Image (cartoon, rainbow, N blue to C red):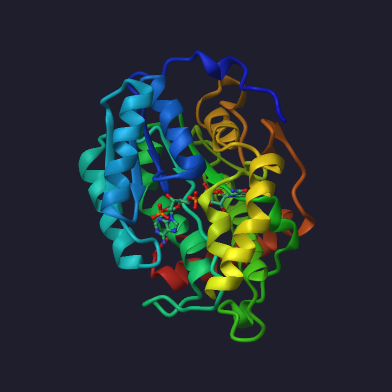
Length: 301
Ligand SMILES: NC(=O)c1ccc[n+]([C@@H]2O[C@H](COP(=O)([O-])OP(=O)(O)OC[C@H]3O[C@@H](n4cnc5c(N)ncnc54)[C@H](OP(=O)(O)O)[C@@H]3O)[C@@H](O)[C@H]2O)c1
């Protein structure tokens, strides 16, 4: 178990606008509650209108704040991410913190309407696109922060630019690990571009947290799914962090004065940690940046 946040616990965030993606459940929802409690204006995103409404009611009830709004976009669609960015820009004259948290796993290989393997599209290309579309507003709001929710799974990730779509040899973990390695490389390449702007960008591993993401890895057949859940329920209950604790490194990086001038780093338990060697490879980070701009049709150097 890791220590609770330090000074960030009590700091008021009044006047700040914080956008958190994927906050209809899990650690994103808990981070939204905590940041709303500290009086930030919180804008959450999800992909299902009913789940967004339920999350908004929950955040308002638990935080006591009404300054919470929801927007809908499926990150598997680049057109939807572009619409989301427009809506955020229309609503938010400033963006003090962007938390790229939405993420998923996919038991079988599927391609999005944009022709990209879904895990890579949702977990890496969507936040890459969203961040770049919001970047001018974030820089204009400086000092500001970008927080990327990665994972220790990045240590098992590899990048094969000749087969980003896993046409050969898909597995749920290979796809997930690649997408999380991409989160770290994106953080590194973006930090380099943001030098001198007073906008920081950091990545984190939230711990192993009992959230809905584990259910997405369950086998599709009914019997195997039941067996998976029976084995998994006690693990979730006794060996994993609660979503509330899992959210702590997010709120720390989003709000703590301790990290106001830290950038380009990877955090675990509120402390910087050396990521895997591949995640510190600047040439790889640049190559991924160029490939990601091509795949998202973005014109950013
Ligand atoms: N839980 C862990 O142990 C763990 C460990 C390391 C890293 N992480 C990372 O933590 C982040 C949050 O995960 P979590 O554990 O809190 O999982 P979760 O409970 O499943 O929450 C994921 C959030 O992302 C949203 N999302 C998923 N796919 C989306 C899509 N295609 N378009 C838009 N939104 C989408 C979900 O929306 P819906 O409500 O519609 O599903 C939900 O709000 C992820 O980036 C994950 O990789 C988690």
